[in-house]
Image (cartoon, rainbow, N blue to C red; front, side, top):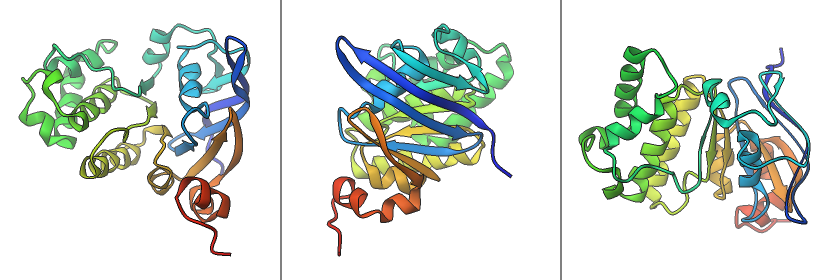
Amino acid sequence: MTTPNLLEIRRLDVSYGGIRAVRGLDLTVGQGELVSLIGANGAGKSTTLRAICGLVPAAGGEILYDGRPILGRPVHEMVLDGLVMVPEGRGIFGQLTIEENLNIGGYTRKDHAEVRATIEHVFELFPRLAERRRQSAGTLSGGEQQMLAMGRAMVSKPRLLLLDEPSMGLAPLMVEKVFEVVRAIAAEGVTILLIEQNARLALEVSARGYVMESGQITLSGPSRQLIDDPKVRAAYLGEEDAA
């Protein structure tokens, strides 16, 4: 039995000035799937996420979320519908405390008791944040800020979570912790589209993957198959083809 697609992108084009950053992109994410999109810096991965969220306009194509077209819809409406992004650079409010940042994640929700319960769940996932809940977010390390950004997204009660480079700039131990939480979030049934330059980590954590080059999808398939692909190993995993 096939899983219905929560996200479906058809022939997406996105242009900046005269440059086509994304060209004819086709991509699907099934309900409950964790799918990765890998590629070199500048391949168009982050632009794709921003187009899904409505932060940059599409020049052509179609994006369906839960079977409905979403191009042109206001960003806040998509958040209300459970489409939430954790952007590259985290976007936290440095002057506010950790707890205040998490509360902002629940601003669209009316179930205040459930919001409180979700925040406590975030603190269980990230004990470091619980220990520092009244500390200003701007004083946190890069890894702790990434935890906070992911936690704030969870408080929004996402159905589809878009993660843009969650490991960027983090120490190896912190990267490991962040990806443990990515797995935990996926295990709770949240659908995830993961953009990540660390191709091996992305493919190890996901069920399926897409490879993006110069604005186009050049390869796709089960993550295990992509890890074993000689071209992927040479270009993204730092390994030469043994043959």
